[in-house]
Image (cartoon, rainbow, N blue to C red; front, side, top):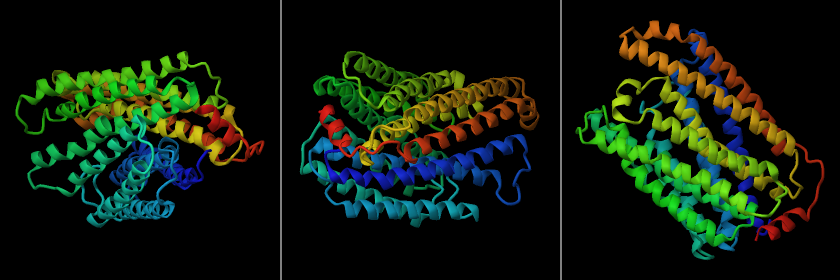
Length: 449
């Protein structure tokens, strides 16, 4: 590790993983309810479990992105973090706001808008924390070297903050509300977050493959252009049935189909760079998570997204378990695996040890990814049956749910396996290292330049 302030990322990684664990707890509780509907119905209704599960996902990923940025920015900018104190304060504010919102949900304190349930004062604290983060990282970049990686990364982060401001706009007209609600929920994860993903992926590829920076940066620009071109107007696939004009159906169908292209480009990008590179990097687990991220993101966000994005198919499938299948695999592949890849790469250098517990880490990768794939398949089959029985045959909702209960049992089993794999990952990353090697960080950083 070349810069001392890269250690600022450590508490961000720890908080992110703690919230990741909590997200898995609420996800497992929700999966149990699908099998045993009266489970905790008095103490914690299902909608509270689901709200907690989805909110924790967004909060821990954002904190993970912040940690990733604080780790790579000093190396990319060739400059120490502008103010570590600001970083710690904004982490405390963000974590407090997230915890307050989570506790409030348990007592029914929320605004009711899916993903944006946070009370107004919590949204204000999140905004303040995010602006502090952007100021800190932007000043670091301004005072140092500008590269394609840190500029694309900061562009994605700034755009995420800008589109977050629409969370404060809550019109009474439901169609208008949904029109702008998707400007956050869709444009974040299928637009500007893809910029963050591409830049972090490019950073890992530079560090672990030894391929010339110029080659990787050219690929990065192409992927960013494709992501913005397809992702922004791809928002139209959410405008099919919310009261918007009919022209959104062809626009949404065409551009959301094109959203597959940047994810496919990332797969080609990652595997080509590892094939082209000649360096045998010591952190094999980080290489596995990096390649896995690009691959699973393509299937989860690309293939499973395409399966029900065309308007004449979405007419039947929207709101079914097919949507849940797509959402789970897409978030896991594109963003969860990416943050886990950065943590796997960075933690040995932050702790100044050899890459440790790699076998356990790689077992965690295969078990977690296999379980998520199995969960996706079961939800997909459940969604196909649900679509036919409910949307085509006209069977009532509760009767359909009883017909697909078997799939919910399998989904619960897969979720439990994901929890076990996550525990393996936590132990591999934060557990005791076999060998303390203070010189490792400097040697690894030097070999990556």
